Length: 149
View (spheres, rainbow, N blue to C red):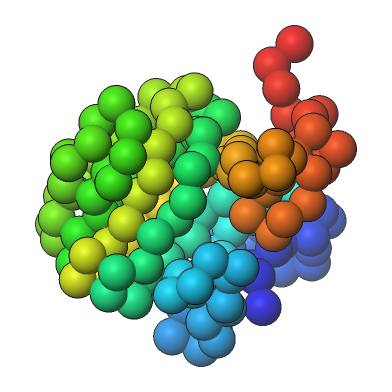
């Protein structure tokens, strides 16, 4: 289950929300070998923080970071397989951030575990020309409202 805090929740302290990932199940994604535990997700803005786990050789296909993406690699590595930074690797204990509009294919040759922060969900470019989010939903219909005006 995603850690989504409802508006107006009645907690003793509405400023702090403790999330316990150890008690959460890994959720499969539509990308083979990629699983996630969503720690924070704001459906109105698209802001998301997640633990991402990749099996050895898992690939995150052609995608664009709509706004800044930040990733701290806890285990393994995250490598740009294709794109302008092809071959750049971020290894365990390292941090990478990508500028808004950056586009690439990423992979984890020996697998990996990372903490990822997205200001808006990524755009994934399908072979048939569609542009979708990670769930496969049309990006413009689902997230077009998050564009800067």
